[in-house]
Image (tube, rainbow, N blue to C red; front, side, top):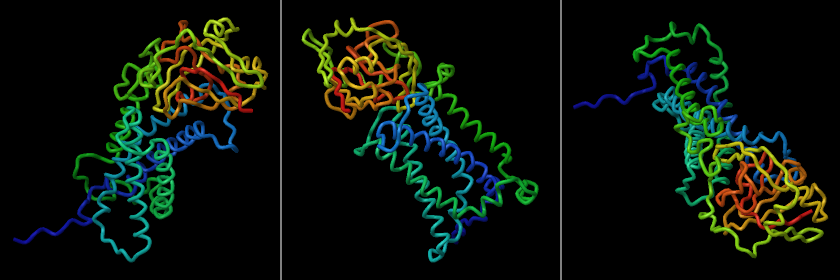
Length: 379
């Protein structure tokens, strides 16, 4: 029995596989990727700040907005990527001459782009669940993949620029009436509405972790506002950090021009200030809260240090990537930055950092160090 001929690119006659459709969805996907990349870059630099890049402490809610957009744009990119791949998959059946440089470069860029983007979106989503089923460090790998995606995307755009330019706007040549009859029952406009609707739906059902108004419908969000001890979610518990509390001998120390030491009662007796600041985590969730404690710049002044000193914060946490953190000059001097002792009108819960934690404006939650027992003035 004679086998049927293998399909070719022309075997897929639907006008939904037209370059105009791919261009429109590609614009949406490109916007999501750009937002995700830029906000992710900002998050990376906040955690690993190069010496040449000053990071401001204000606006106080900036990181809450940028990281919420980062995770939201990454989630929205999933249905957009699937739709984009569906529009162009007939190209896989096109004849390919491996000796031709342009087609070879095009296919290589697509291979790198699609595989790296799929992996990036997968590990990014799994990170929001705080599940790490791999041996490599997430943050460094996520950062490297982002640059790989950008490089592959630029190559792909350069190769496809003439085709993109020809289909950027709707023309008579790309209009549905000039193409073969539709066989799927779905028009182009219907496809665009379906893809936009799917992206909007996953966005609305996940953005509630950083936008409280959407909290009731945040079925895809791993965290919800106001859920947790003292009305605030918890990522890393005291048990996971190996912290069981303090005993009667616990003292808080500041190592600076003058070394100071305080009991918890002595810390509570110092002048207290209040800051209304959110906890904004790299996983995308955020929640505003009312914090009370001692201003960092007041502690530095008492230790004889300049208010804009760099400060190393040391936790009682047993190991871990964030058992210590560095508070840059702008953040140490900001009057909103506190050594917090109370949260939402009550003493800190152990899972929220009892006896003391750092809270500062425009900082990732992983750098708002909990269970603090000492400060070291670095400059």
